[in-house]
Length: 174
Image (cartoon, rainbow, N blue to C red; front, side, top):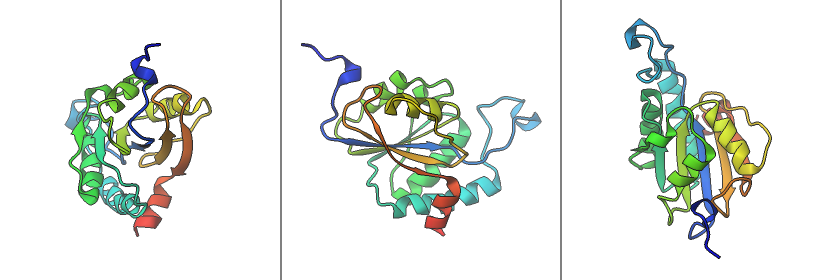
């Protein structure tokens, strides 16, 4: 029987990190009231730098960092990727409105990766996490990291391994 793309097994168990971007400026005159160009605040950058050190101390062996094209996600991914020594990749499917099948399609581009870190938005991080683990709601404050184990790339197949609120990551990094 033929397997559909959303039911494919990665070449090995995949660890997925879902990271919500750091604290960003509100949309306003500087961004022409648009969402996409919103940047991290100075405090958001500082906090994310410390949190990135915490993520590195978890020693999760991420092999890829992928982010939404929105400025605040790119900046977050650059900070975390810089600490991890991984150049982030911008992926259009991670724009706000991400659906679990879009994420699974993106993960299929990394068949050999044992661990992938994805930086995105709310409520997308909560909804795709719930879809991957089979329900529930995970609160993603700005800078929260969830770790999900994926033995198969399909809905309801994942297991939530850990949830790190931003303050916990900063404690690890401080």
